[in-house]
Length: 211
Length: 211
Image 1 (cartoon, one colour):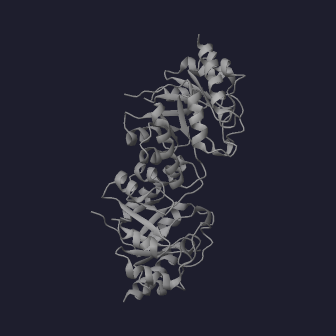
Image 2 (cartoon, each protein chain N blue to C red):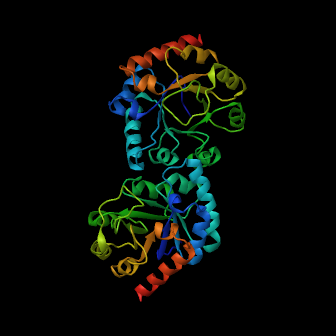
């Protein structure tokens, strides 16, 4: 069945990898403790996206770390990824679930309490609480929810959750204590001088915060 | 089984519709003689693409005109379109066919003789010979093939074909006489003052050129 761990969820962004190959950064991050990887590509061709997804899948397989595709259901199907992450402006959840089947992981971004209430009606596998803080990584995000937003949403949500947006070492503990099951990061790992070290430090903070 | 007619194939481009709703322009064009419609969206969200595809499908159904989705296999699946059109930089054909099934129409853009030779090995339903002439509609196209390119490709191709790229009333006859089964247009209809009239004039030229 579905086997996934939201503790430390890396979302890729090629432009933030400081020129290093995406696969290398991701593999180092996984060695450091990343438990899930989401491939997000917004500008390349479908063939490039597909080829990149196949490479990442191969890279993650030995570590048993699931590959989740952002938005593009067709790429998820084509590379037989473990799952799909959709936002409020992507293909509607019920269509995605029908096409992907019940055994795949589907995550949904929620941007406010109302989204979280709606998400409770769906058999999604997790929610991404987005954005917790302001971020430069994505420019099309809703208003930052802050720690109180994370707390409000995790209290009413029936789904496991990760916070995303502006998360780094300095605020990870607060987010876990506000009720999130894990954190999702982009630049805190993608742009780290040492992605493996960055991942292991974040992982440690999360584990300690849960005690 | 698959029922389609390549005679006059409209490819949409919202930015060229002179501010008119896409559905209105397409419906007028179909009334004028358009036999197939391809929805191409490169900048909107997946949800907008999906919603637009559903609207177009509903609009085309009474006319029995097939809706083909450009590139996005997931949108084609999600709206149960009649088919998919892929280019050389999209998801590979054999993956698309496996996911869509044998009853859907799949078209492939070929940009040179070598692509056409490769396409002969595939059970695709048609080829789009692209671009015949220079065009301002797409900026990422290969070198223009000209009429001799159309002639060379149609002579060796085992698939039915449409020419695309820079086609209008003045050169339609030449393309049909060079061996294409139909023409594919964007601005010649999308930007016409009267899309229905533009379609009916093009349709007339094609039918006469085949006699």
